[in-house]
Amino acid sequence: MIRIDYNKCVGCMSCVRVCPFNVIREYEGQARLDTTRHCIQCLHCAAICSVKAIDWSGETAILEDEPYQPTDDFRQSLKGFIKTRRSVRLFHEEPVPRKIVEEALDVAAYAPSAKNQHPSRWIVMDNQDIIQACMKDILEFVHQNKISQEINVLYEEGRNVVFGQAPTVVIGCANENSINPLADLALEAHTATLYLESMGISSCWAGYFARLTNQIDSIKERIKVSAGERVYVALMLGYPKGEEYCHIPVRRQKQKISWID
Ligand SMILES: Cc1cc2nc3c(=O)[nH]c(=O)nc-3n(C[C@H](O)[C@H](O)[C@H](O)COP(=O)(O)O)c2cc1C
Ligand code: SF4
Ligand code: SF4
Image 1 (cartoon, rainbow, N blue to C red):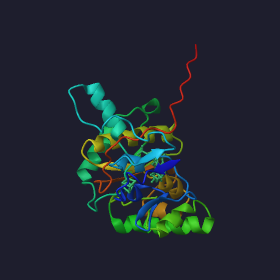
Image 2 (cartoon, protein in one colour; image 1 turned 90 degrees about the vertical axis):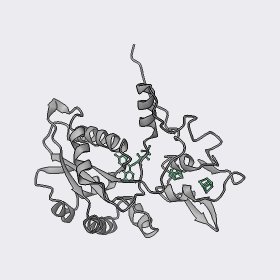
Image 3 (tube, protein in one colour; image 1 turned 135 degrees about the vertical axis):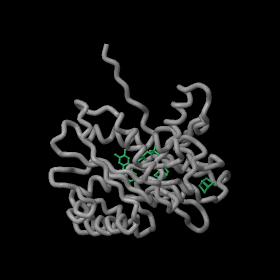
């Protein structure tokens, strides 16, 4: 589990700010772990700690590599770029320019898709009133149905795990009878996020929103999801604010690879 070395900690509270599930919280002026909370092991806390005060049960939580710096070596640059991308949930209020969102989605169409079907249709919300109306419906739905209760608990603590502080939300839907819409849309979405990242625009998957939207008619009506369509992916987008990571976190789950000889 996460450990904070208080001999190194300078009390900047960056780890508190970025912990997506409020596992680390400020208590009496100190960053403290709440062990009753579910830690998703993202290690964003360690990645943002400039004095390297956070480890994982005595093991390092960060890579020795420095975050991405372009070099003349394309492969190294690409590797660094991919490993440096983080899910970001804290943004400036300014929406992503529509032209840029459209450009990224056009690029995303070059991702592969089953039988080249490209079944995606993209819906973009960049009006806070509409985003907040969707949030209100989600809060009511999870409360009434007693599911994903952490959404409400965290929201009351001031943390929105559904939309973060995103000024722009991109939603990918497709006809349910497409061959493999989830894979197709996931590939397009990640392609778009990498392209946006190259322009200083950060993102985070909005998995709660994608899943819950299909169960909430008021949201489907508001965002105009047609009959026969289903939402498969959603992304929070924006210019990052207060989530500048100085390290690359290790992956807690080592990659599992089996070779069949
Ligand atoms: C399918 C999927 C759904 C996700 N849903 C959410 C979500 O609803 N809210 C959220 O804050 N993060 C969400 N995430 C982000 C993950 O928590 C994040 O990718 C993970 O912790 C690893 O962090 P990294 O992307 O910075 O490496 C989702 C990611 C994926 C791939
Ligand atoms: S980010 Fe590091 S220095 Fe800042 S409060 Fe957390 S542990 Fe302490
Ligand atoms: S690993 Fe992620 S979820 Fe766990 S305490 Fe750190 S930031 Fe929070």
